[in-house]
Image (tube, rainbow, N blue to C red; front, side, top):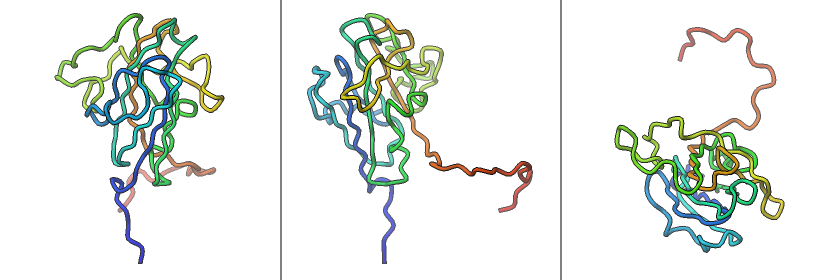
Length: 185
């Protein structure tokens, strides 16, 4: 008999490079920078973070030392032991539109808590105009995944966040034209 595994029994591994410097990494509002392997100050070294599949939010802050999108960005790809995990879709190439970023030239845009006291790297944070969809970066790493960067191509300090959702990999080819307005359970 096969036992059913819980999400927290599965591991997720995210591999990333941030050109140039990774400042901090949070998972569900908890700082995990010290759990990241790889040199955070060397963009060419791959970084790795492993965590439970039950996690709901990943946030990464960092900066480019040059002009922003033309020379830097975040390259990330996550995978889970759980083949139906929402984390398998976290990738800077295929789901950049699911990410949010706050960006600024010369310093982080969001430095304090929102009006309710929540920080930008928590799920309770109220997303405002400071955050939007990252631009596609100008280059990839080893031609594996495209990068993503700030809201404006010359902004070189970034705060990325994602709360992945589970999607169906193959939606129905013929959805019903008149769904039931009051379905029964």
